[in-house]
Image (cartoon, rainbow, N blue to C red; front, side):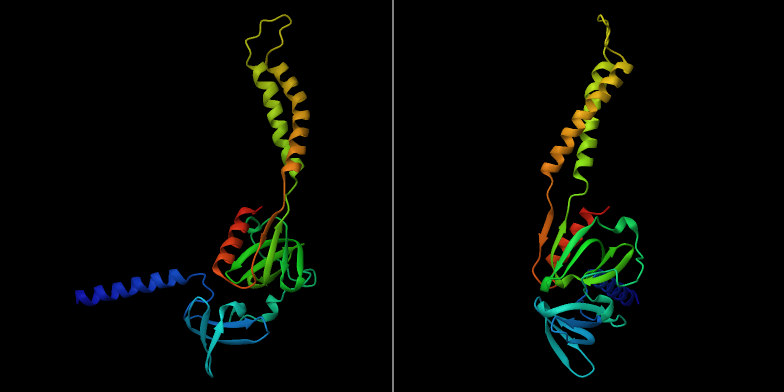
Length: 245
């Protein structure tokens, strides 16, 4: 009896480990899904096996050998392809975004195969085959496989540089005088004098900081190969976490 219980426990732990290892994997063996290729072909079935470059999809009729590089979308069987269409605009979707603000990135431009482009959109990670993009409180899903380039532009570099430089200038003028022993004639020391000098220095230091920030800022550009692969998914997730608002 103890041996049976022990074997059952091992099987349970093995099943949990397998599930965790496949969590978030859109091409996990055993998944029932709908697969769409770049040439427009789509089919539905169960993933029977998978290698680094090919998967076998078991349909009601036959087993299909599908090159991974040719896969554009991997969707749940109840999802319609129209929800994942890539377009030049989001404004025609008329669907309100349902997302958590802290999960979104700053604005970026996304370039696709074939020259299509989405400008000034925010991204939310949806799963390992699709992203949600948002603009003007409207959203749509796009396939990761077709993304060729993502460009994040620096957000208000002058303003951020000005704040840093201004704070530095204020501290530079305030601290030495506010905490000085004084005693000179005239006595130029104390918190009041330090406050005035700090405010005076904060303006030119802020301007210097703003200009330096603009000159030193640059676009964050990442270029991808076409297709859906692990390194691309990992890099996009990193970009989203890096540029979250």
